[in-house]
Every structure is written in C-alpha cells, then in structure tokens.
Length: 493
Image (cartoon, rainbow, N blue to C red):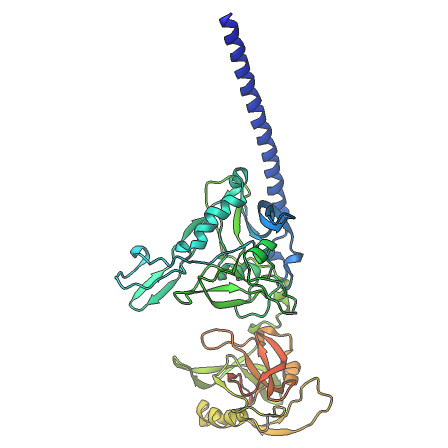
C-alpha cells in the first residue's frame, strides 16, 4: 500500500515537472519567435541616418520595445505602455535605438560628488567639483537602475547589449588636468558629437532642426513638468532633453537640445525639468562583445549635402594682405567668385574681425553710403591690411547701394569704393543664394561666424546678414557688432 502511494506521488511529481518543462519550452518558443520578429524588423527598418535633416520625428519609422509610464487613465494613474523607439543606426551585430519621445525628467546630477584621483594626471587636494561627469552623475545611476528595471522585463533584458561609452575629454582646472571616464551602460543618452553625427553633419550653432526635436509623453510633461515651448511656432509643445557632455562648459553647467532641435549651453546640472531620451543597444546576433558607438566612418547619407552648393575646391584662391587675429598675423586668402575684363571679384575666405555697420542706432533704413563700416573698410582696414604694392592691385569699383529685394521703389545710388560688403544682388549673381558651402562663414579658429551684407533689412536700423550659410533678409540690428567678410575687385596678373 505504501509503495503504491509512493508510486503515485512520484508519478505526480514527474507529471508536474513535465508540465513545467513544457510551459517553459512554450514560453521559450514564444520569446524566441518574438525576438526573431523584433530583430527582423530592426534589420529592415530605415535608420535616422537615411532621413533628411529636415524630417520630423513623426515621419520616422518606429519599433516598440519595453514599457514605461506614459498616459494617465480615468483613475489618475500613469500606466505603463509600449515604448516607441527610432533606429539611430545598426551594424552587423547591434542596433542603436533612441526613444521617439522624452519619457521622463531628472536632474543630471544633484549629489555634487567630489572628484577623486582616479582620472587625474596631476593630483592635489584642492580639486574642483566635477559633478557634470557622466560616470558620477545621478542621472546615469538612475537610468541604469530604476528606469532600466522599470522599462524592461527579464526576456527583454536578454536582448540588450551593454554599451561601452567614450566620455573622454580634457578640462584644465587651474594647475590640474581632468579627463572624463569611459563607462559601461545598459541605458544612456547620446553626447553632442554622437547626436550631430547621426542626426546631421551640421554643428551646434545650426538653425532649428526638426529631426532632433521631439515632444514629451503626458507623464513627462504633466507629472514631471518637462520644460516645453509654449509659443506659436512649429515646435510648440516640444520639450528640452539632456545630452552627455563631450566638452567641458563649466563645473556646474551642461548642454541640452531645445524644443526646436538647437543646442543650448549652460543649463544647471541640478535643473529638474529637463527630459530624458534613453538610448539602448539591441543585439542582432549573439555576441559577448560590448556595443560601441563608432564615429570613425561617415554614416549619414543625407541628400541635403547635394544642395549645399558648389564644392569649395572648385574656386580659385589668391593671397593678398595680412590680418592679425588674437593669436598671430597671417596672410589673407580670398575666393575668386567672378572674373571679367582682366579683373576678379574676390571674397575673404574667413571673416576678418568684427565691426558695426553703424556705431549708433539710427531711425532710418540702413544706407551703405553713410555707414561707419564703409568708412572703416576703406580707411583703417585698407591701410593696415595691405602693403603699398598690394594696394596697386585693388581697383576702385562703382558700388551700387543695395535695396531690400522686397522693396517696391528702387533708388539707384552709387559710391566709389575699393573695399566693400557684398549686396544680396551680388550674392545672387556671382555666388548663388543657396550656395551654402561658400556662404558659410568661419573665423580663424574654424568656428561658424555670421557676417553682414550691405543690403538693408526690413525695418529701420537693420541690415541683411548671412547666418550659417543662409541669407537672413529680415535683417538684424545695424548697430550690433558682427563679423566682416570683405570683398573687392583686384587686377589679374
């Protein structure tokens, strides 16, 4: 009798084990099938790098993965819902995803840790606080603990590959040199260099960018009070989100991407209303190697590059005159933009200092003839920039005072000048208003620099200007100091 009972117990235990194994197998099959579907979709999805930089977040293809608090139900609870992700890029082994929307808000760092000697080249006791280090940030800890566990279940975590992040940059703290620390993270945010590499080859000073701009979820906006834009432009309702530091701004400040997609400096690391767009690597095939963000190869296939105008390599250059910047005195290079009758119209390759179109505010339409910039260019600039021999090559030109293109009444007025600023009409005739390559101005450090035209703006005391290779016809205050990019006609040898 006892033996029979034992047999029955053994049979029941055996049957239970079989059932558990079958359930586990079924779950494994379902999970494997689900994984295959996700991986297959990621392999066929369109990457951010394949969209034009003018595309908006709503145009991007998305995939769902993980769950997070997003919308409030009828009982006032923010329930978890599937998270939408965009595909930033993929290689043979991994796919880099970034959340389509801003999911939450947190300070970058509210602990203000003191820097230890781990990454010091020169040690010392009087070391500044370096709370904007990604490795030591409370945001990093929170994302890789709470957010990671809240967003993904065990099966989803199996698909996530650890990311090895490059956070190196040097910062001089008095007599000390500090460098960032590389980290290993499951969840992270992009840094400035990575963001601009994948979302566009433009730089932080570029105009509003729809591709980088996005909204926040109801949870981020209403519960966490995300910083959003309340104006009437296209980015109304969009939010601001953190990016990892790539260059040091200060001990207490970092940068964010604003609601319009532009880069904004010096946001306090303790600010509570800036958002998080988490990034994660998904394994496309089994590997024990960590994922890395590789910026060595050019990835963007943006067709906008074709629209930036004529390659600068096609322009002839001449060297004439010398200019002293804050570092050194250098010869000036000029682009030849037009040749006719044995002479050439040349435009300085870089901006050459700053000046005001008018030294004081005026209550009339800006006029080249009576401008302070005309006096300066044909006086002090001309005399200090060129030698007596070089001055012989620079020809007087009949310069027509430029009218705004929208003005109905044209007033033809001419001045005789050797050095001048280009007009809108001259840009249109000799360069092309869409020729961003040549219109993009840079200073001696290679930084983007806006520069003035001599064409008046829409209102009094305004002149047209070129900003990031785009002509601003509305204009900007003529009594504000801006960069100079002089032009002149020279005799050809």
